[in-house]
Structure formats: C-alpha cells, structure tokens
Figure 1: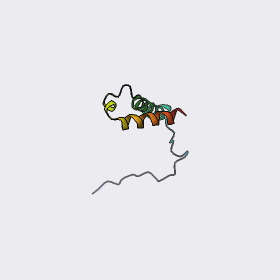
Figure 2: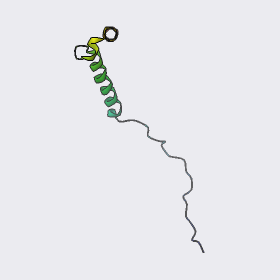
Figure 3: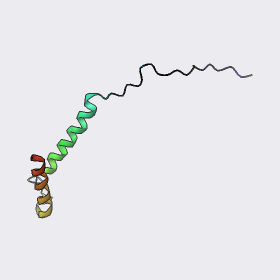
Figure 4: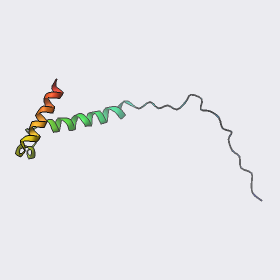
Length: 68
C-alpha cells in the first residue's frame, strides 16, 4: 500500500520575481570591454600590427572615431 503524498496548492507569487541585477553585474563586463578596447586602440603596443599598415590604419581610424 502506498502512502499518500502531500502537495502544496499552486499560488501566484506575491510580489513577482526580483529581476534586478547588482551594480557589479553590469559594471564588470563594461569595465572589461573598455579595457580590451583600450588595448586594441593603442597601436604603439601592437607589435604584430606594425608590419601591416592596413590594420594600423583601421585602428587609428577607430581611435579617431571614438575620440569624437
């Protein structure tokens, strides 16, 4: 003989689901993006890009575009 199971009645959530993110959940990816962008935009440190003038020209153009 099996024992009866007790289930809770279905109820709607009272206040809804809290979907707010903490401040660092947005700040850390934004900070990482800016750091990587600054690494890309500094052609003086990009030793491999010094051989290819097209890449250097593109990076300088992007730097001028962002500086506006």
